Image: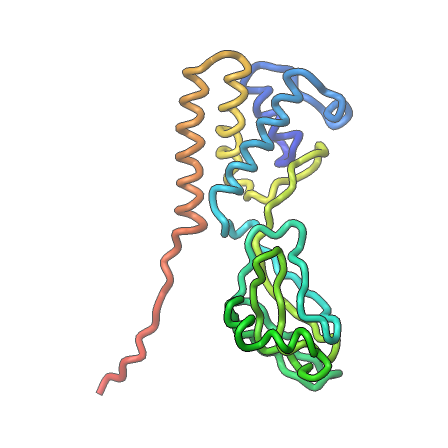
Length: 229
């Protein structure tokens, strides 16, 4: 099987439509149909990534060094959705603190009960114990940090488009067929084959459903706490 990268995915289309395959040397300069094929691959990947907020292949953990007396921090530029139940202050021997989770606080409660902390951070600063989501693309920690603690949290990225021939999608390779079917929806349209495009669309939608079954619709196990007497 061809390499699982941008070049390989575009060549999947070329092979299906009997076009000459590209190489790493001529990939960047290939125009016309090849440029359309590149766009088709990226559009398929983009559609898959937008189909669910919580694809596990887009999950990352971020570490951030807090600034003393600073409450609000910007989201990462590639953040799609932030998991506010995952925020924790990392334990540190230097600061003699243990790893502790932060309690999620809604913005209205922050405004009602805790906003004074942001305006007078030096009066309240300590180890943060709460985190709140702002209406903008920011989050805040309370109390304001009194030291440069390390904050860990998790979020889901919205990957950028593939550009170079050796760029690899975050989507697992076993779902390559889903990207292919999605790209063929547009590729067949380039050729004016409406019927084949519609069939590819059906396969693409089914492929996304298959991905949900594999990666999203999981059954969690529970353990009984009943005591048998």
